[in-house]
Image (tube, rainbow, N blue to C red; front, side, top):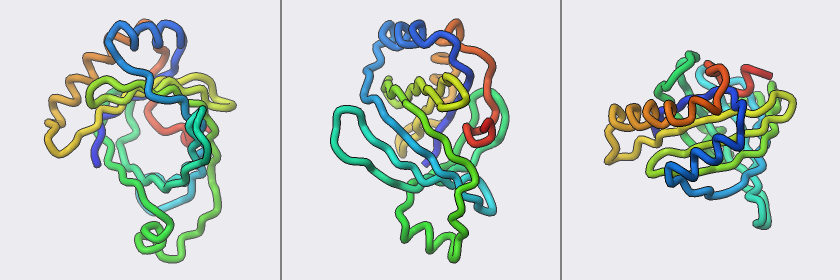
Length: 169
C-alpha cells in the first residue's frame, strides 16, 4: 500500500478534535497500541499489539514501512504481515526489540484520510494525517487533500516531525 502522510507535535488536542468535527470527520475508535521495533535491512518493521477501547481482545500484526525522513507530507510504502510472512521475507530475523513505543490513538476518518491524535508515552502528543492511496486513488490528489487538511489543523500543531516515533525515543 501507499500513503501520503504527515506528522507533527500536537499542541492543542481540543482544537484538533474541534477541527475534526468542523471538517465532518468521524471518530472511529480509541486504540491502545504497543509497537515493538526490530531491525531490518531497509525501512522499519514493528510488531503492533492493538486493543480497541470498549472491545474485547488484542490484535497483533507486523507492519513494515519505508519513507523518506523529512518533515512535511511524504509518500510511505507499507504492508501488514503475519508471522509466517515475516519469516519468509527475513529468514532468521533477529526479533530483538530495539525500540518500544506505547500510545493511545484517537482515530478519526475523513474520506480516504486517517487522522491520528496520539498520546505517546514518554514523548508527548502528536498529530498524523495518513492519506490512503487505494487502487482507484490518485496519489497527487491524495497529497493535495493531505496538504489542504494540514492547513486546517495548523493552529493546533507544533513542529513537524521527520521520522517515526521510534526515531524520537
